[in-house]
Image (tube, rainbow over all chains, first blue to last red; front, side, top):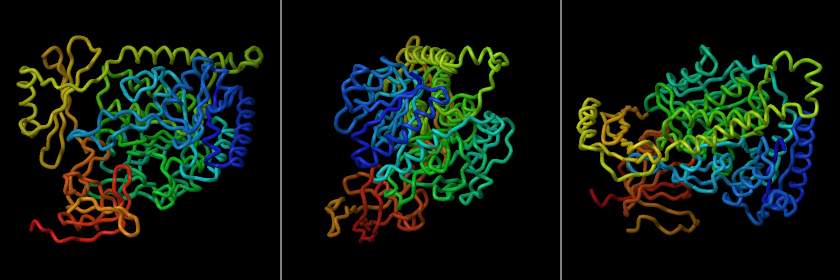
Length: 496
Length: 92
C-alpha cells in the first residue's frame, strides 16, 4: 500500500453532520482517483469502523478518539500494511495529537508550555507514551491534512483535499526563489539559514521595518522561510527591534496572495498552532490561511520554539533541513522524516530544547505531495525503462528509500542516549573549572541557577549541567558536559 | 481578600492582584519581559488584553505595579482581560 488516509467518521460526522461527512468522502474519492493516476495506491482507513479495522487486526475506535487509541491504530496499520505515506485527516479536535511532556518546561530555566502537542510519536515505532525520550528515531512518513477548529462546515478541508488532488510537481527552478522574513534582531541567524538552503541570499525582509501588508509579488515565491515571534492563539507573527515588536505577518493579509504549491517553514513560537478563530476575533491561524490560499505544505511548531539570535540551532536547523529536502525532490512527508532524522542524528544527545524541537514541529498538508520534480537519470527516461516499470512507477524505489529511512530511524531510537533529570551536582573539578568561566561571562556563580541531567546510555557517567544567570539585561547560559567527573565540553548560549 | 473571585453577574471570571513585569519563557524564541498578575496566593498569571498587542501592550504597561481587578476569560496559558479596574493599594 502506498498511502493510507486515516479518518474518524464519527468525529467528522459530529462536527460536520452527515451531509458534511458525505461531502468529505466524495472529495476523498477524487483524491484517491487522482493518486491512482499519479501511480499511488491510496486507501481510506475509517478507524471507527469494524471491517477495515479487522483487516489490520485492530479494534475500532468508538467514541471520540484519543491519542493513545490513534497511536495504537497507526502501529497496527504499519504492521499490517506499512504504507509509504500516512495522512491524518482533520485537525487536533478530530484526530488528537500526543501531549508529550515538555522537558524544557518549568522553573527559572524553563518555558511555560506544560506539554508539547505532537504528531512525532505517530511517526515512530515506540509504543504510546508521553515521554519524548521514547520518540528519538522516527521511521514513518506522516502528515496532517487539517480542517478548521470550531468550524461547522468542512469548507477548508474540502478545499485542501481537492487541492491535493490537483497538485503537480514543478521544476526545481520554480522553487529557488524564496520569501524570507525575519525579526530584525535574528537577521544573522535567518541569513545563515537561507544561505544554507538557497545559496547566496538575495532579499531578506526584516521586521521592523517591513510588513505586514505584503504585496502579491513579495509573497509570490514558492518557498517561504519565516523566523519571527509568534504567540499562542494569535493570527500574526511579530518582528523585533529592541523592545519594539511590530506585526510582521497577519493571516488575513495573506489571502489571495499565495502561489499554488507554496511550501512554508515557520520557526515562530506557536507558528503552526491550530486554534479556533473564535479565540482570535474570527481570524484564522496563519498555517490554515496559507494552506487555504494554495500552499501545499506548512512546517511549523505547536508551542514555544528555540533558536539562537546568531548562528543556527534547534528550530533553524529543522526548518532548513526540511526545505533542503523539498528542494532535492522529496515529498513533503519524506522531507520532514529526513529532516527529523538529520536533526536527531547529528547530535550525541538531545538537550531539553532539542527534544522539544524534535517533537513540536509537524507537517500540515498531504505528505505524499512532491513540490519539486525529481530529475531522473537518462535510462529512466527511455521507453524500455518506462515500459518495465509502468505498473509500479516509483513504488519500488520508494520502498527502497523507506527501507533505508526505517533502518536509520531504528538506529537512532536504539542508539541516542536519553536525558533524565538528576539531582547530582557538578564534580569539584568541574565546579572549579566552570566558576571562572561564569565570572568571565559577567555572571556571579553564587546567583546562577543550575539544572542537571544524566545522559542515560552515554558511555561512562555523563552529566549535563545548565547554568543560567543575568549579565546586565542579558540572560546567559553555560551548558556544561561532565564525563566521569571531568569537564568534557562547555558552550555558551545567549538567550534573546 | 481572595485572589480569584467567583464569576461576576455576567458570568465572567475575575482576578485581583498586583501587575508585575517578569522575564518569561527564558532562552526560547518567546523570551520577553511580560506583564503578569501576582495573585494573593503567590500564583502568577500571564495577562493579555483583548485587542491589545500580546507582547507589548502600552495600556497594561502603564498599570505596572498597581493592584488591579480584571475580568475576562481564563484561557490555557494566559488570562484574556476584557475589563480592568484599579484598586486601592493597601500596602502603600
